[in-house]
Image (tube, rainbow, N blue to C red):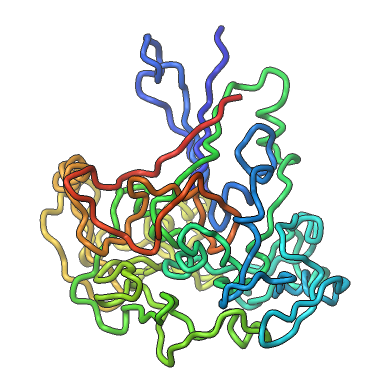
Length: 436
């Protein structure tokens, strides 16, 4: 019997496996593929998790030109500023002094990529409990939390990532991140079960997409939209307060890291008024950045059911699943039909004007299908936030405003989304694969 061919698609921590049509047999090339596995790398880049695997275009190919981080004025840092309480000095020894910023600081880390689990292994008790998941902006000190080797979070927002990419130079990850030097960290994942499975005796043949291009800048919210619907949601008529306000550098923050998290500022805005909001900036935006009524950062619709033990809002579909798994202990059953949400199978031809903080309703299947088929044949409007334009070679999926990535060849200024002219509009992410 022929061994299976497994295609592993590393996109941007959900794991989805689905059969490929025609996999039962036949001479078509896709008939040899039995399953496609999609790993959604939430808050991780390819290099962060898989860049050390043999044979991939990963950490071994990272050159200094695309890993050496520079400050706001363009001068390279001497050290990497750290905010995570387990990476600062102390508790780590200070082996480096940086005087390139207005405030001199010391660090254990030089200006280079570093392996996170050398300092915060999976066994480290650095994870908060569920009730305090967002109560420790700089992480939980080892010995004070639960096991799991958690780090602090890091920014993954639409405009910040474009500042970090710096037109393809990829040298402002540290300056544009609230987590500063943590954005240059990576993990050794050779001990993961998936690695042992794919490299053990009789392992399935597989291809790993190590040159993946994410669909849009920023976090999971917008990239989820592109993964499923290949489009950016819009919010016509939204309140002015929902729009971002940018400074001349395209940044929506006054200081990074924020003063509440660090005494050292790596980025200081030249503006006095900025706003990091859910929607794109009003038009025109600085540096020809995306503008208008596009929802690019996380938004939630109001009135979601809440898990009683945690106070966490969840979608009704997820609540029903939790009820099934918990034997009916996941809180009250949501009503069969909420306002503005049709029951399963109903076709929606009408758009609903959203309330403040709520996205308009998506089109039903009868309207959506032809729209998706025609997407590749029409232009996107100027200022559209979708990325992946022809000729641009930005590397890898990325959801966190800072992990390693490189470009192949020259890329023009990526801070200026543009409409195509008579060509194919950008669609799903492009990628290259490597077989093993």
